[in-house]
Length: 208
Image (tube, rainbow, N blue to C red; front, side):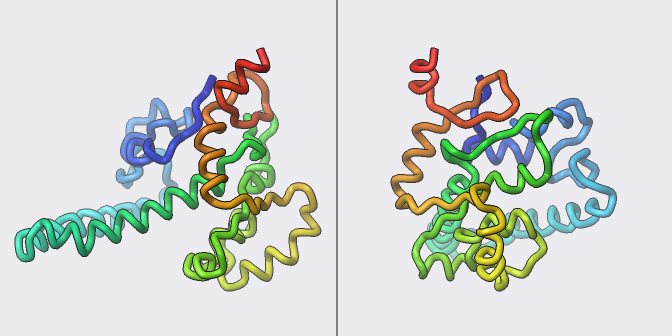
C-alpha cells in the first residue's frame, strides 16, 4: 500500500525530493534549492539561484531583526502571521487535491488532461474566496489554464462547467467536515491498479 503525501512531509520533499517522482531517485542533485537539480530545465536554473538568494537573505534579515528587536517580537509580528498564512496554504492545498472521490492515475492511464482534472473547487465563503483571489473555488480552471490571470478564473469556471460535465469536481461540504473526511479516510492507495482512489485502513479491511 502506498501512503498519500501529507503536508507535514513537504519540507522533506523540497529539500530531498522525499516522496517525489521515482525518476529522480538516483539523480545526483534533486533538491528544489539546487539550481542544477534534475527537476529543472536549463532555462529555470538562474531563477532557482535567484530564489535561493532571496530565501537566505530573508533568513539573515530575521536573524538581524531578532538581534535588534528581540526574538519574541519577531515571533509575534512575523512568526504568528507566517503560521496563520501557512495553515491556510496547507489546508487549501490539501483539500484541493485530496478526497475519497478524487482519482489517482498510474502511468498506463495518466494523461495531462486527466491529471489536470484531479482537483476540487471548494468555497470558503465569499470573504475568504475573494481574499484568496478565488484560487479556492476556481482551482479546476487554474489547473487547466495555469497562465490565465486570476481575475478571469470565475468567468472561465462558469464557461467550462457544462463542457466538463461529470469530470468537473466541486464539493460544497463544509470545510471542517471535508478536512476531517480527507484526513481520516484518505490514507493510502492500493499497490495494484491503474485508476486508484484514496481510502482508509478500515475501508481496506472491509473489502478483504
